Amino acid sequence: DETNDSVTIETNEGTMTRTNIVSHLDGEKLRLEFDERYDAGDKASASSRFVHEFSASETGVHHKIEIHDVVMPGVLGFFYRHFGSGNIGKGFLGAYTQRFSNPQ
Image (tube, rainbow, N blue to C red; front, side, top):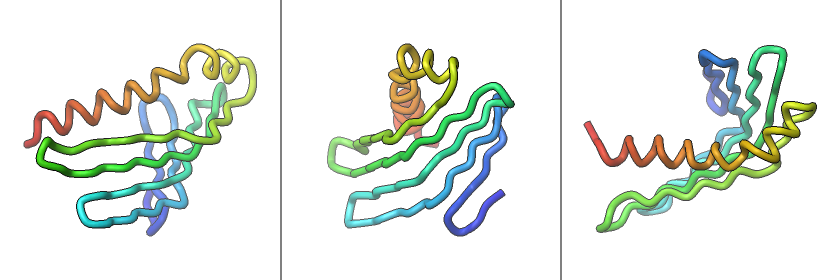
């Protein structure tokens, strides 16, 4: 499901909704911002603000990601905040590295 500033993505684990999507293109730099709500069934939900910055140079594409205002309530949220939050950034960087390292 998609509009001008939002998209809903169904995954094998739940529903991801990204809203307030804004992009800024300035020369060789792209900044992409959005709010995300992720519902993994009725067991867990999380919301956060993402900012991605991509810049091109002679050495390749550089990526910076910021994740702000993460909210995940309940017992699962406690474990996520204390033990799993670092894995999200590593997962994003790994996916982008794999994609940009093997262009098709």
